[in-house]
Amino acid sequence: MPYRATRKLTNLGAGLLLTAGALVAIGSAPRAGAAEAPADVTSANVRRTGLRASLLHMGSTRADVERALGRPTVVTPLGFGDDDALLFYADQPVRTRVVLTRCRVTEVSLDVAYFDPAPLPRRARGVKATMVRRGVTDLLGAPSTVHRWTEAGRALEQMTFTASGEPEFSVFLADGLVVNVRLGHVRPPDIACLVLPAAAPETPPRTDLSVGLTPAQATPLLGSLESSTHFTLKGQPVDYDTYRDRRGSGLISVTFIGGVLTTFKIWPPSES
Image (cartoon, rainbow, N blue to C red; front, side, top):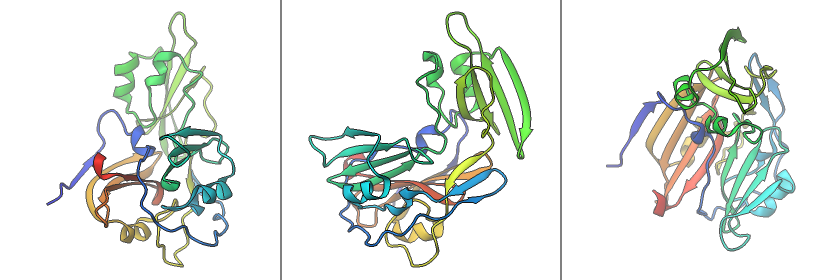
């Protein structure tokens, strides 16, 4: 019997659950006739936007990727040639990673909780999105100042750290999870808002995994559930699930945030 687990996140957060790399192809044929990306929809603290990444699916070719998203910001080889590569898109409404294996898409990840660590002091770069408060203070020590307030129904907190020889920086949390780290003490304007892909239309029936699918649309494309992790990000439920591929060729991990697929990834048999 395969191991099956359901657990809630309780300690150092799940930043790595939101994005990751993949290393195997599955040989699914590319979908013909790419449609337009869905339209924008905005609610109290979530903006659902049509993303070009939703036009990609498991098994799309590199040509499909560049037709949908254009030229990548950065290309990182993952093998000896262009067959295996990480394509990074910083210019999309949500930063997007696409992994190709043997020229086929094996991962699409949306960095919905991204913040740029490059300008931060070295010790602040260890703070990851969705880390819990205790993890931050264990890493950085007690903050110099703390401010708490409520916005869009979310309990928000700003911890500012000041130390000799380094610039001041602030860690921002929503409902106890890190959502931003930045220099200075100015609050980001969108701290309570989350940008997610618009949900895919119900028809026609989906035949391949793609960003924007609902759990009901994605589940028939997956195999048996191996493990499941649940937490909340800016008031939206996050489900990180791992399935045994129906064809027995490894594992598939998927992340749903706010009821839509934001990451899918294939793990090869050698890593499962």
